Length: 509
Image (tube, rainbow, N blue to C red; front, side):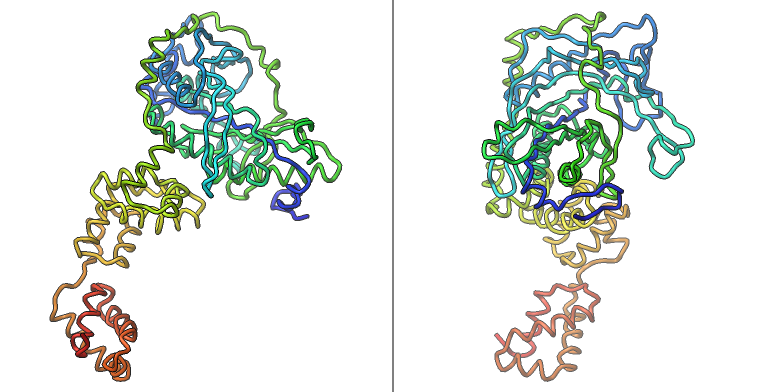
């Protein structure tokens, strides 16, 4: 048994899976990109001045009456259809009653036993190409809460803070909560399934254009429910264990890590003879652990009752079918089509998918880059940085237009790959677009044959033994001379041209 930086013990992952079968339930909250909030006309712009996008309705002031956002309802129906759900002919809102400082009404307007979409599924492709079907319990409409900021203290949470501030701009923004049925049978691949599901769902929502799905901004958030049950020959006869709910996990990598950690933490408790507390937990990206939040309430604790100020929602079948006609190409089918268009091998396309770069490469190609050039930068240098820093490739402030411009600088002959990597570093550092960075840093391949020839002569003269080997037919020895010429030219030379000059000067065809 090993320990983490937290006080709680964890069991080795393989040992945990040898004794227990993980069961997951994933709840994904999606902020819709409507121009106005769910029940009022307030703007939804991200990053506005605190409490500047509020009104009596979203602040829950006495006498203020809500009105349903038609566009949000249409988006909810499209999401349900894309998830292969049944669309309710009649549904209504309910009040979910609980107190929290960032919820101005002391209840959340949501849907309880009558969601707008239910009983669907989403097929998820894993890294090795196998498919796992995620059954969808429901997708329902609700409103988001505000946002608390806890000032002072070391953790940014309320415990230990000096004081708290509340921004109600987010209160009332339209949300769709997508709830899976219990995910069973994934075994040791449960964390991978969780990540792949959220990634696939994100791709689908982006294709629907119903949300910007920016996990780092909170417009896509995942709550991961995890429980363990003992392994047995007849696994279906074994009841589910007590679950925990890790709240608001906001990156694909964190979803995978949080599920894996909870499996090892719960296994350690159960192996030691303890019991799991049904509770919410907080995920800590820096330490890779979860910590206890609050005891998890059951549905009856929220005292749901129908919202008296809103009429039921009853979409006509004509509307539903019209919206079905607006659905985009399914992401998996689209990936196969793009793979053919781009000429990528299965392995190359899998790398693109695993890096979360399908849309980025598509937009980069549309911006003028070659498919190979776009793939090289997104799944090469940027993916390497993302993996090393535990981030997503889209989190560096580099846009498809930047990569297309960088690819153009390489293919035009202005930059070599080494110089292009320096330019990319400058773009990430906020120095500007690729051409601006190259100009500012004075990066450009030297095309002056006289300067290159002089450098080649100098290197050949300094290395007579290597020159003799090349003249004798050992052309591979030219690599050492090329490296020295590149050093002499401070990397600002075309290696292929340098090689040609060396062989010409040594009389090798």
